[in-house]
Image 1 (cartoon, protein in one colour):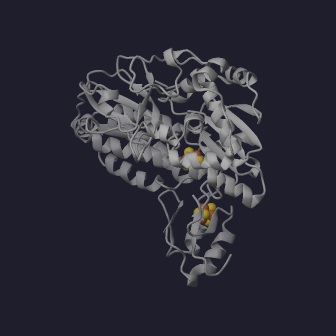
Image 2 (spheres, chains in turn yellow, blue):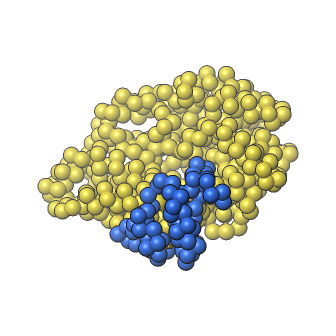
Image 3 (cartoon, chains in turn green, yellow):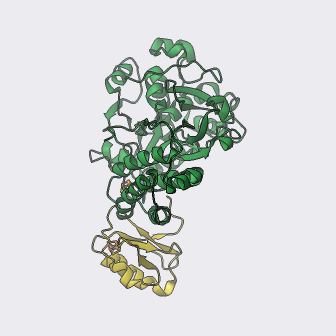
Length: 407
Length: 74
Ligand code: SF4
Ligand code: SF4
């Protein structure tokens, strides 16, 4: 894996990431965390429930409830579930899963075995875009009760969407499917399927070892534990850090010289810097943990237009409203990003946003609309300036990472 | 499915081709957006139109329109 990330800022004693940025092999891993013991599935499930662990892939869904739903579906259908560790991380601004898999692969693999045990799975997969061979050699060091197949995913924003992932593991194209019945009931080759983000599995491996109280000793009573974040601060290397929920955002990002912060990535929200200064790390809007500071000399509308163009191209093009609406919204934002007359463009964007929301097989339209609406609000003054033919930004260098961007 | 289970209209967006037939059959519950795709009112189907709703489901050329029990898991 090529990610280069430093860990100069420490917000807590790290739980997940091997210290010093050095990857932990199996013996280092076992020395550090102690051996893994499985215990019985019911005890594990109870501990997970008490820990309050939620998914770290973006939706923050309670892990315990997901495990139970899959186990129930298995009982109902009489089919052994499939477990898929989701390391897709299609979000271009996020690096935390890749970093975790490189530094602490065995923590994720422990978690995968535990999750498989908890739901009684008969099959386990680890799906990644990068580093498949590295992970295969990590797997070869282990003596796992359930063999794990590493799946190499195509690099697309939506490859990690649960139903797309289940399709790909089944041997089909990685496209989202209609959500009824849901993947947890009918996923990989129609078996009940647990798709769980790799960071969630790593936390699970620690919850199983050290218990719920230990897990809850970081974070807040309603949002216990810690989370990995990818921090984008202009002029600095992109960093992955581990931080407890409830930590003030201004501890993570320097907000002077910043006009706005993108919270949660490309399906996330722009918030003005003044508001960000009042906020804490919150699972409700953190998405997959991306935090990006927009310097005052850059144009947030232009950055949003770049992201929207990328998001429109990433639409799987299966669903009419998404296929029609996203490209229109993206090109309207290009108009808004260009200083000059806007006519009804902002109203068009608002109307199209309403038309795509909730009308797709996956949440891609909803996430896109979230970003759009936050940009219209947070950058309202800049949009007015553009309408008058001006732009306050003095630096037009692209800021946010967009793969294969055409210029 | 049980007559009494409240049902709602569910569109499989990966299948729907915007044929618009459903909007003709259920004009009070389905309209078409500016691209020709169905806009469904989210409520449960009143019993008196259940029959027509079933017909819309079976007549949809790509079987994209389904009637599902309310509260079906997301
Ligand atoms: S909503 Fe959009 S991205 Fe999602 S499956 Fe449909 S067309 Fe693809
Ligand atoms: S009849 Fe079927 S394909 Fe046509 S608009 Fe309605 S749901 Fe879509």
